[in-house]
Length: 161
Image (cartoon, rainbow, N blue to C red; front, side, top):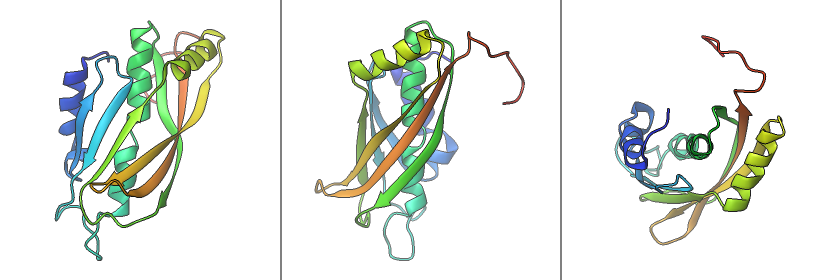
């Protein structure tokens, strides 16, 4: 669904899989080209070593590239099927405090997706996410592979995927 950046921010803040892991969306850009996210360390998401559970860090990175591409492409008149096709993570340093990341999609990346979809092809591409602590130290590297398909070309509406 097409929504405002502020509405999507609040929807994601209270989306249970993120809310209960203390993943907090700070801001979506009005044109959906970026998002800022904070992972709050709490009793709900710490591990045995008193650092943020790796699954929480991985979960925090999961939805955002797909959400950004979906909203951007809707603004360009597309009705798409967007999902995270694959992901990988490297934990570099324990998250002993809150963690932060920002995702930005550049104009040339949007153009590439538009060109691919207009040609009737699926757009599939991996994007990096760098997750930092408050000191600016890199704690995790994530790679998210996004899958985008134009639903107006060759896909019938179905109840299930």
